[in-house]
Image 1: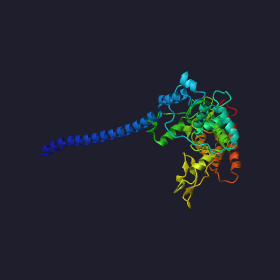
Image 2: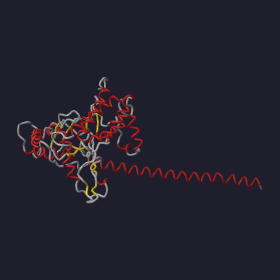
Image 3: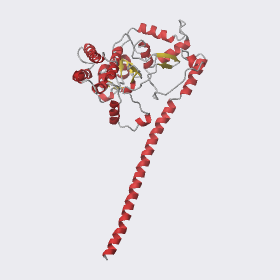
Image 4: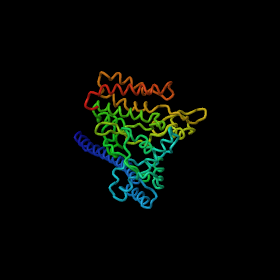
Length: 369
């Protein structure tokens, strides 16, 4: 009898294990299928958007048809449409509607003369109607306007030519501040916290990081109350910055750098419940006037404070011990800078110059400077 009970127990145990295994296998297969399905759907959505908005040949056909019929003109039209020595490569953006109107600027007459000189693509001393149409279309784009205004500045990519509303700019070999770029498919599945850790690991040596940081500070100086007005950096994420083989900073994407007057027109009187409703781009924030439920027009943080927020972890990691404490102190003062502070412009200049001086003193004697 005892033997029979043992036998029964022995027979029932494998059955229980087999049933449990089957359940676990089904559960695993279901969640695996679900993960594959969701991932495939995300990839398909991204790919369909990419292919829809990055049709290089369609874009070329439209532009060249207009050029051949005399509707538009520009210094790059011949290379693109006649000689075919200019071709489309990698699509860098799938975001449409990157336009803004030209607002009131300082020295407007000088700016107009500068634009006219660029619009005269064949340099015959006059701007034809096709050239004027091309220039007007391009002036609706923040990035083109900035490249024209800052064409002699070191950290702005050079404008290589244009045709209609298509423009060509200098290629920047390194398109990431941190020196690592992953395919967008992989980026979708990397947690943001792990991505930040990866970014910090894949950076140049500290002297080279300091040189890149100085470049960003100099660019902030270029767009802060320059001869053609003040420009606001509304997306200071690392993906918009790059550097060349000499570790000179180059702006990769300037479409979210907008004239201050334009931003005020865009955001003022926008309905709001909290300050979170008063944001343009990622970084240009104003406050919500609770009495009127309308956004105010004054941006809270200047460009320098946003640049220092980006540079803080970047510069402090691996910083030489003899300047680390002073560097951290200066960066904190920089981040705390606000537009409403008393004597803001004086503080802005003082903090910016102190940071540049501290960094240059440390790297001026190295080969990386």
